Image (cartoon, rainbow, N blue to C red):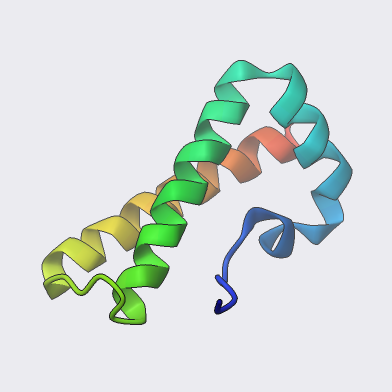
Length: 79
């Protein structure tokens, strides 16, 4: 099994504790994290040709992943 890059704990290692805390205490954050995880896996499968797709669909998934990552980062750094 290959390593999936861009997992949240790798993207935000300095926020590892807060990631875990928010996943268990904030339903909205947990949903965003789950959605990020699913789309990240789908992007990885497309990139490695496990589940090939056309370039436009892959690009749209990457944009969605980036948007989710931005939302998650905003919640992690909110004071």
